[in-house]
Image (cartoon, rainbow, N blue to C red; front, side, top):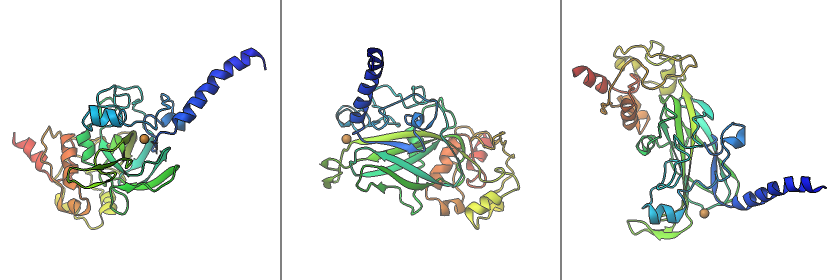
Length: 312
Ligand SMILES: [Cu+2]
């Protein structure tokens, strides 16, 4: 081999060795591919070799400097938010397209197993240039098919898969799915004085993926309720139909929240219908978040925010 070839290969080898050592740390959201991991799956997005280390800057930064706070996508709370809108990895590229109510596969690549549990949240953000908020994510804690929100991590260092059920009625041109891994590497005590390995402050890993969710039927609000009936079983849809305008459906079939022809302003008292509430534990929160985003789908939410607006 001549020197030129060795010279050209050597830096690559050093980089590879460096990253093999680095990948001892932790875990990444790969299905749907997170903003920082999309490049591994053929997307033309910026490369982040540290996509398994979105851990709030590490335990010391998160708990000793920032009081436990973290950027919603795993960046240090007191640092640059590379994984949030405006940051270099948040390109707004949608990595997966789903249908409302769908059971979706999730995969986490665990490179060092610290135990603990995963949680997942989703926010109908509908604007890739707007940072997703923690409060929006907290309104939509996702459930597994068995109804549980926490997924306990078994032992092993590999890819782990689970399923999550998307909320019925939640559609978006851009939703953010947030993965949060609350590890159990430290023995500590929580505020109730329960002490255990995993109690109290722990290292956390996060990841955000951009996805879209289209309606399962033809459209919301029209006289075609097949989508709702198939989703809800015996819901009496006619009872809550109050003559809202037919929503606009964009060319790709999505119904962007806020574009259903009803401008709801900033009112936050949109309540869920009884039948929706009976089937979805977070129905009221969901309707409030929808309402705050300017959307109040008549099949799922009462007309309180619409009538409030009209009374003005
Ligand atoms: Cu660690």
